[in-house]
Length: 120
Image (tube, rainbow, N blue to C red; front, side, top):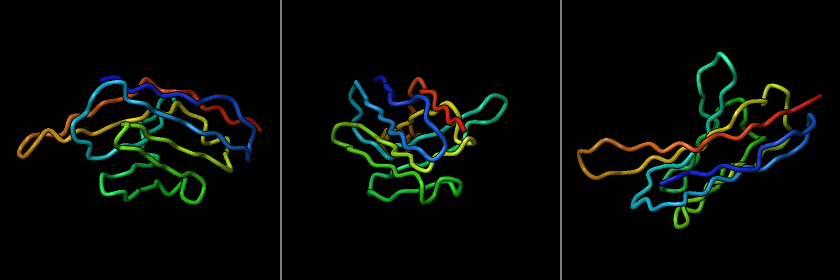
């Protein structure tokens, strides 16, 4: 299983950018897929996630600006970002949590990260 993230780049403040993450392997049962971000010297933080029931969760700092969507059949997750701010500059990572069955811990897969830079 390998998560391949793409779509990062340079965008001006107020602009939009879309990220994609494709799973090139097979994950039998997905609990949730999400996007995280990290800047130097800081912990990786949740940006948004989509759960197996289709519900979504967003960090407060992206609510109303970012939209997560996913296709569990194709193991693909997207992040549409708009009204970008300089503080959104970070490396963005996709993540997938696999359900390994009753009584077993979830297994977490991470993508390689894609750089998003927002310039003023």
